[in-house]
Length: 74
Image (tube, rainbow, N blue to C red; front, side, top):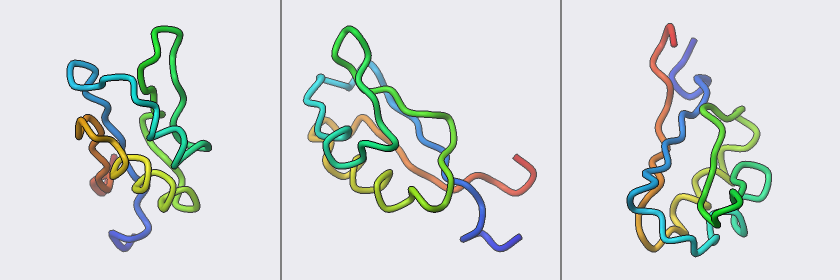
């Protein structure tokens, strides 16, 4: 499988998340906000939601979200 076909893996560093919720505004099908007001993301995201995942991560002023490609075999 080509690297561009591997799913995305999203990590939210809750120690950095400040609850701005811009990630959910930019990626509503990817990011959710928990009861405490912090970002929550699924462990992996299908390819069709890649643009939303990346926009949401880029919108985070605290840089609390990391988006990367899964490694082959993951």
